[in-house]
Image 1 (cartoon, rainbow, N blue to C red):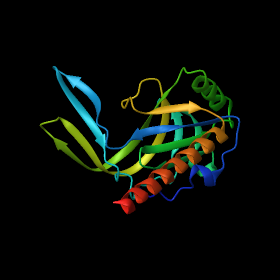
Image 2 (image 1 turned 180 degrees about the horizontal axis):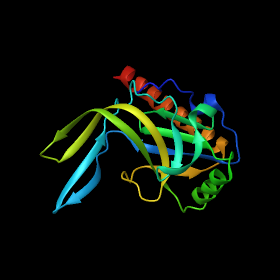
Image 3 (image 1 turned 120 degrees about the vertical axis):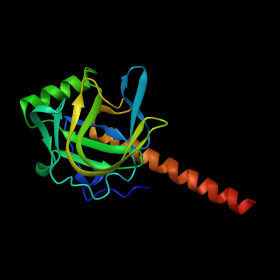
Image 4 (image 1 turned 90 degrees about the vertical axis):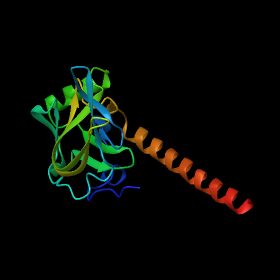
Length: 189
């Protein structure tokens, strides 16, 4: 399991707001179609360890990587953490009219995907599969709610903070049950 970066987790941060959103700005180890040219498909994949040591000192949240800042890590309205699935993002969109408008667009299903802006410090390319693998990220600049994502596996949704807490606790209980069952099966053999 990837250890969270030195950023408070959602449970520690306690963003308790009526304007709470969360999602994944990217996913790990899942190649996604980046573009197609002359019938050739080119893919990109983010390695699950790419964020280890990345500068995430003041990430911002925007819409389509431009315009007004909707949330910001340094003022406590944005949180980002790497987990097994990808770069989990959560935000309080209550601090400005533009942020509240974005919350409504997310809540109403008009905006459902995310993206991120970053600088690569190490990558590799597989000519056979036409896949670029991002091995190391130097800096993360923003996480954005977007209308058209590069990575279709991303998502963002508006929800009650406690819906997320309950869901994560249920997932943790399920994982504990799986481990206990595995131990039990191993001892019975």
